[in-house]
Length: 261
Image (cartoon, rainbow, N blue to C red; front, side, top):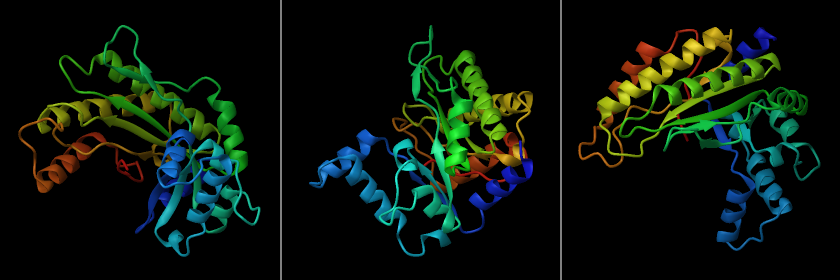
């Protein structure tokens, strides 16, 4: 693990005035978007759209990294330059989503576990060689009647930590994304409690897996009420609760927090 590289990459991704562009729509999602505006979906039209996006003048002044989909990682700009190389030439770090999606958690109805650990080391090694410098893995936690269960929170926290350790081993900065969903009618207070508990589980597991916290980024939810809750907090109440939750749950060593797109 090159800790200096990890620290440098993490800091550059969240440099003042910069954010991360999520351009990792699946082939299916991107094809649907193209079809909706009358463009025939294909690998070439998806490539052309991405190449046009990444040729935008001056975007590097506000973008520290771009999350790519696997297909895009392997494609080129119009002049033949591999897309990851074109991004790096402009001082933008290429990133890649490496989980394989949230699947049903056995014996726990309405709860999910994110999969993708099998073969992750080899995939990360290949992506690093292709130019990737950071990764993303999303866990989903739902609030409802009797959920989230301890099993759901703990298994997702463990998977996030294993993912992070493997990525760092291969020189990639892992974005840790434990998302507490806003689906449901739960209160803001319930969201606060579940988010704090989830983050505590996650950081306990990261510590156990010897993950370098100065070489990660955290991508959490804000502290909001469920969409179906009759009492919705104000913008100021959301901001205050979110900052309060993170101050109680996120170690100071973490170089940055990036919110859900």
